[in-house]
Image 1 (cartoon, rainbow, N blue to C red):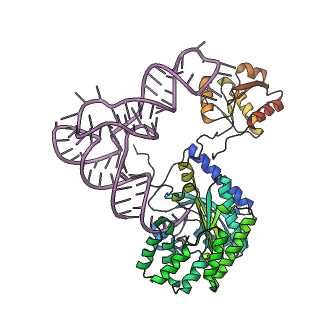
Image 2 (cartoon, chains in turn red, cyan):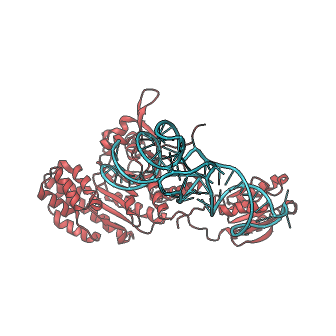
Length: 448
RNA sequence: GUGGUAGUAGCUCAGCUGGUUAGAGCGUCGGAUUGUGGCUCCGAAGGUCGGGGGUUCAAAUCCCCUCUAUCACCCCA
């Protein structure tokens, strides 16, 4: 006997978990398409050099890689952005710019699993390639907001920053080449506090007055308007920073104009996003009820991503919804309703010798756009109804030989326990009408 | 990868300082007049006590290793 088991950080999904997963992906697709993004897919496995080209030591360490049977060095993708860079370089001439795509797929990282962190997980990415316009900055923010809203999350905050602000400041302080160290340290300010960041920076050899300025800069808080104002006064005269600030101003105004509530977003200069490739605006999204799980949707602008693969200048911007992390959060918050009917109409099997009649009935139901399921065994009616009830079917159709002979069926509303007899063979319209009235009643939402 | 905590039935857990055939609730399956569900009652199945090794007359219980989960570091969705 082989022990049935799965690898650390890899999971099976039972129907109760898979139904909300699929629903979430459908929501993401719907929102992405609403903004004109089109779907693509890329291989799970790539040449190792394609994946390691742009990553840091950390991503290299976490990547699953091996030599395939043909002796090639290959790796499993650890995000969807690097494959997009390769994809764009390879196909952009057939696609034209701007190119807006979404990509939902699994990625793999060999890191230690934790709550909401797995070794195999699904990301729902959307990116815009080939424009540096601030319009795509705005659109990215709007999509993130709409996505979270449509999923049904009431409390979340989209935190926005622009790398140019900090880069500009660091250049002015003469720390231009230590950006990564400072960014990484600053990213922890929320979690560990200013003291810890100060210590980390001074251990990295950054001088006292420099640290003071960095921390003062990162401690600016308040509503977007106020933050932008303070930043403007502090960064005046710094060309690079002012450019980033101008863009943030445009984004801020557009978000308000598009109806994004003030409490849903913040300008927060302490967020850094570890990935080195971001060059402009950056986003992360925290859940109001579960901030400790981390960002569920992050991204930003990367103006040089494809440079390793092509001489063509391909700027890009996008973000990634962490499907599995979000689901883990929703589950923790008790927002995933366990029951979701796989189909809406249940057909009880009574007289096994009349099987074709049941399939004739089922075909009629499905032809009219309702999903239905025929019970596989002619068990006691009570047991069949119990099954239907437990799966959450709203409607059951019951007919024995007597009714079938007469072309009748009992249409039973499983929630009200009411039922009516209908002539389905001679009067299908009346039958479908009866079904429709029962099924149009509120179906419970997937996310409470 | 490093460190802390944990692992008993499908799920949630009980099992005192080692002592004979390891229990409960829920769930599953069967039954209570093969034609009407969520309640009730009766019954059954289901456990190598995560796995391996060791100490002991005796290990779910103590020790070591390992696997898995979880938390922290690191990093990130």
